[in-house]
Amino acid sequence: MEISTHDFKNNAKKALKDKNLQIAMKRATKTFVAKREKAISSLDNFEELRSYCGAVKAHTIEHLDYYLEEFISNLENLGVNVHFAADGEEANKIVTQLALEKNVKTVVKAKSMVTEEILLNDALEAVGVEALETDLGEYILQLDGDFPSHIIGPAMHKTKEQITKLFHEKLGSKEDASIIELTAVARKVLRKGFLKADMGISGANFAVAETGSIVLVENEGNIRLTTSLPKIHLTVMGLEKIIPRLKDLPAFLTILPRSATGQKASSYVSLITGPKKETDPDGPEEQHVLIIDNGRSNILADPKLRDALRCIRCGACLNICPVYQNVGGHAYGWVYPGPIGSVLDPGLLGLDSTHQLPQACSLCGACGEVCPVKIPLPELLLEHRQRAVKQGLSAKAEKIGIGAFAFMATHPKLWNSATKIGRLGSQFLSREGHIKGSKIPVMKEWLKERDFKTPAQKSFREQWRNLKDEK
Image 1 (cartoon, rainbow, N blue to C red):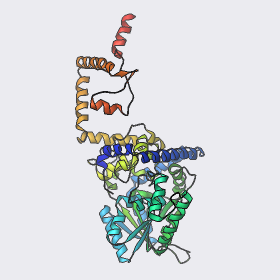
Image 2: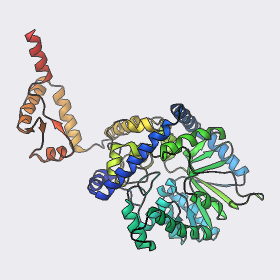
Image 3: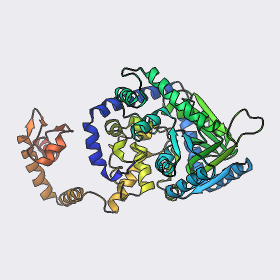
Image 4: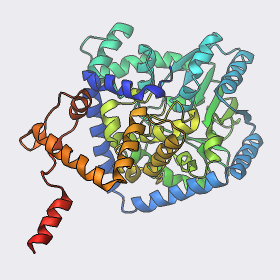
């Protein structure tokens, strides 16, 4: 996956012209939003749970050094091998070396955003290790040589018709196969992968410092097979996944599925606490946990941005965002799209290459309203915008426009004359009370997506002056 966060505007234009994408996005986001509303309405204390989980994550982030040390100590006491990586390159080196040392030929992978972030599949392929995605959405994308567009629904940008055609071409399914038939075909292929895999790789939804437990939630059962059938299990996780205590977990398991998929509970919840014991019927003989920084410590060190590390990857902010609903995830140009991506990506990749993303926001505030851990996303987006301006990253046209506006606004006579000319000129472009179009290229492009009411013939100040004179 090539990072193209710097080219959001062009990516978005292409997305708006993609008819299949538009159909897929409208179907999916509408469904997710409706299911979430229904799921949270069944809880009388949803807002209390949001506050509790937000406070737990905020507390953990503030004391992350302490809880990481506790988590690592408990992992090692359980016999788990712990690894650290400062960035994606180091992380891939650790994983590939482990695979080669253990003579691993095939890996099965559960859905993991952090492994997408570091391009782990490419690194494994480079050393001759086959990596099979086992989440159905991720498997669809792997078949098509594509990459995720959503945190929860990675193949959200594809229509059922496109997937049916893909399975017919790649797996020989019927041209008119039903969803049930498509799932059965995928299951048949994936089961073979589980049975021959030498290593299973997963992410972590939560990591409990108190017990050294890795917590994973899912609906398909593939994660449980990934973590229990192969002899070796590797968890790849960002350092922000920690929560302090086991008793904190039920609150998160209540708000996460409701926010993510609109379910009251996930179908499967796994707590992995150390490798297989003699009395266990299944499980890995060897367990490894790889903790990755990859820019997270930069966000952690910034008091104005560290709230972004509270994110529990539910995707609710994406589903509700009017921009994401129209352009999809690929337009953002990296692993994390939507509002949370527009906040995280500048912190992880740097503002130079991502400053267009915080601008991809109407500031409607919906993302902040739905976030289950109360991340102040609109405030963080504004913070990035402000920093971009201070660093001189604004577009030249914007700088000239704002400069001209500031000059005119501080010279009343010039302002009055210019606005009067503007009001008179707008009357020539008006049709039925609205400006419908213009021969001026900039205006013509702008008015394609906007409904602009014709300004009044007299300004407010003129009308107010006349009203006072009448009295």
